[in-house]
Amino acid sequence: MDPIVLVHGGSGYIPASRVPLKIAGCKKAVLEGYKVFEKGGSSLDAVEAAVRVMEDDPAFNAGYGSVLNIDGEIEMDASIMTGNNLRAGAVTIVKDVAHPISLARLVMEKTKHVLLGGEGCKKFAIKHGVQILPPGALVTEQAKQVLEYYKEFGGDFTEIGSNNKKGEVGTVGAVAIDSNGLLSVATSTGGISGKLPGRCSDTSQIGAGSYADNCNGVVSTTGHGEAIAQFCLAHAIIKAIESGKTAQKATTDCIETLTKHFNKTAGAITLSKSGDVGIHFSSKSMAWAYRLKHELHYGVERDQHEIEKLQN
Image (cartoon, rainbow, N blue to C red):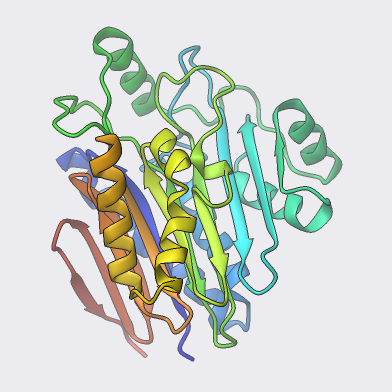
């Protein structure tokens, strides 16, 4: 089987000035994830590597670049999962950690739990040698501006017909299949600008933000977190594949159903167990990219699908 790494950089409204940054960041993440395969690594290693790239990139709402809660602080969520044994790890309300996705993997591999949050998660991180950054180290000027706009005007970036054009919501995620057929997913986010302190997003909830099942497929989602959590979007897409739908059909149908029911937008990236790709979003934009063999595929607007040939 030919390995694939597929990433998204979050759905929502993306200002024109930031579109090139999103595309470049997604391309970089895909190529970094694919390097893992070239070195003999697994799909789990690949999705973690890809998401770490986006957590370091201020163009994305994850890690450095995360949006701020109403008190002006960053609280991040992440989840990771493998499809062969349904093992998963997640973290929520994480502060001052550069790579929440790697912390989620530690939860999966070093504990009997699926989800850790808050102060307990911080103690766990310190115990396992994760660096705790100085308060505010992950805050960007963009995040400050978006919060100030939210405080003055409010608004919901994910509501159909919204006129709020100041900033974008989003999440980053990666799904992959390796040459052994192992499916893995990693998803990470800073959440929603202006959220209440202590809010846990869909990204930290297995079945909502992430799901992997070698019998069917793998999914990472983005968009309105509460709607995604209520709909269990990632798991819904997997069940649709199980019912016989293609990865693309399952992804499209589930997102459109969620959007119709909640009047909120969402997006997702999907791979089936055979490596078929599914990409769909009901928001205006969602940056995405994937590598298959010597081709790099990417897009950001609806119906956009660019293909770049890579050197051998």
